[in-house]
Image (tube, one colour):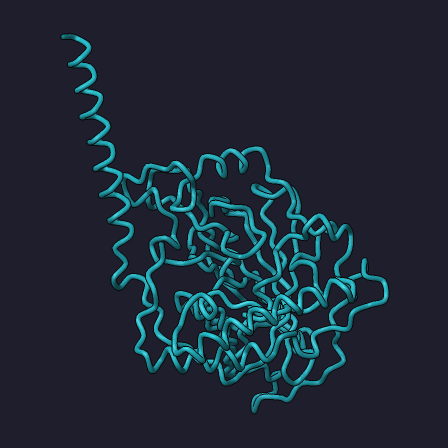
Length: 376
């Protein structure tokens, strides 16, 4: 559905080199020690003292691609039971699978080709069993009754059997607008770069996919309510305001555009808070978002090359309880962003509609012929 990023052979070669450099970091660096009890998730370490910016904030600047956790599912597979962590044997099996991916990369490089080995990159991703850490069972909370109805009735290019007759049959990512929030903060099959930039009074998160940029003002915690936009002012990524708790940046986001994928009014469609291209996320990209949606992120540097990112999502009109995911970010300042060409040359929305129209016309003509034959 998505158009391929237009790049020259030179840029592809450069990306291949960067991908191999990233693959070498097959496990998150200094992210978190694995406890003896694999059913326990320890708190985020806060003893590391990061360098300071010239204006005195903890310095988190750098490139932190999350390819190295892209193989972790959002929800915990049932075979891991109540464990947050893999056993040594399970981790060895995961590492062996990562080795086979490395071999695929090497074979492509040796033959001078670029194929699925680099398109869908995978590595051992550490010893976690899932990105979710709350609920403790590793499963997303159930939908509310009304949200379940909207989810089931939703339409996108990912829903089977959908006849795409107009743009309101496609989600915001189909149309190259946004993956949604907090969906944009989770790993995908590619374009997983995250760049952190800082300036006095601001914290910026640049995202490689669709090149979304989150410019987050740094405020006093007690001033957040006064800085909030009116409830009717909303954006795809919401309004994010951050404050420091020690060396941890806490970001609170509200005013996210609300909507669903069941409506036939294009302006009332909303992005899904989770994207199905993140492993272990419910299918179809049709989870609705209500005006009560709120995201709280905690960003903590745990070593010179590692950040722990936690995100808690609550939307009482959609999920019966909040949920929290924890992601390990590993520094790779050799990683680069290249053009993300999605709108350019993206003929698929038009092609879906054209082919659906042709199919409906053919069905109507066949029905007319059958009716005529039956009356003779």
